[in-house]
Image (tube, rainbow, N blue to C red; front, side):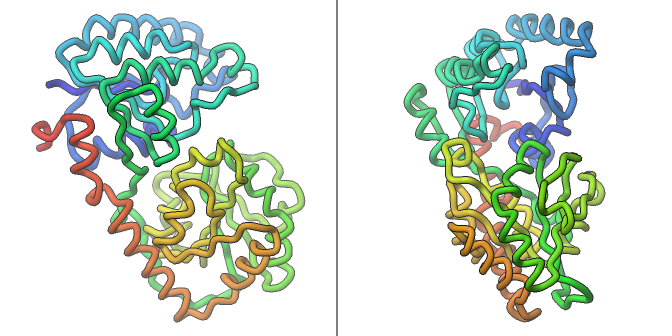
Length: 349
């Protein structure tokens, strides 16, 4: 069957890129793509300046409902930022095989303006109920979906390890360098470990590279942060230049929906890692030999210990992390499961 993909933003958007477009590129699957406005995000402030494009996108989705019978349709998170679930449900139900994929706790009610106006959690439920297959990014998300859908499979967020620059030297020429890579919306997690970061800086001189499109102040840690814009062509080199990666989370329901993607990128780069053992992070850290602090004191000790690793020990941890990604979180490891869920095994060239 022809494959049609629907997402509310294009390949520059992190979730759609990781959960959909990277899979299609890896497997070389022919498809027709519908990406609303095709941008990095669809925040109300971003799209308000393009009213005509929004009208075209909304009309295009409704026309697509008439075109998808006879096709497999894979939807990443949602079709429209203005939907309350109706267009998503119609698209998934109209396709011969409707597949809904999500990788965040979007089933939880939101209390910001967009959440109150468009209720993404209700849109999520209608999409889950309408889909023939639901693909969830971790076990906790799958449990939520299984309350409303009969066929739910878990496919973790994956990376292509060979696309990353593998760290090859662990000798340090200067101060220890931690790295955090992510989107502006997740930068506030860094504030949750501000004091441990400062403690590690005071004890070892450690600095933190933040690779992100964000510009907002990070408060007290601004003095030890070096910001770098995220670019497709350069982020892998930034990772390989660091000494270890960090992924703090707060222990709350929204964090349980996270799929450990930062840790996977650190591991693909053969970096040692430190992360909060919350949700999918816990298993990823255990497999990769990462440090898993649970309190501010634990974080301080873990960061200082990482900053003081010998080159031999850092290389050992980096090699273990890379093996874990190859075996448990690579496209090669999960391609059979993804193709089976989507139903495109015969389409691969």
